[in-house]
Length: 99
Image (cartoon, rainbow, N blue to C red; front, side):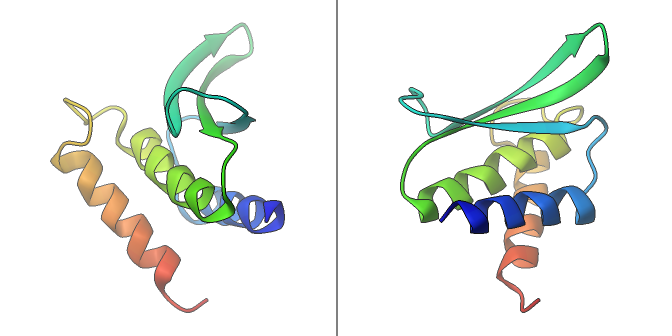
């Protein structure tokens, strides 16, 4: 359900800072489950996370994976490397622990 998605995003932004703000877009028909990119506009830099519209559980997992990319952006040398994995595992443990 979209409420869970929004709640997770709010908690991620509150509890796990990134160097630049994160904006998340739900994209029907996106080729991949998700994408994370660093964007720069006249108003500044920000992370754009795109998540394919799918089942709620898939979207929640994808949001966590892509958010880990935003957290590791400046230290990740290649996709899903050790630096990303550290942040991803931190987020998974945080997400799965009782609130």
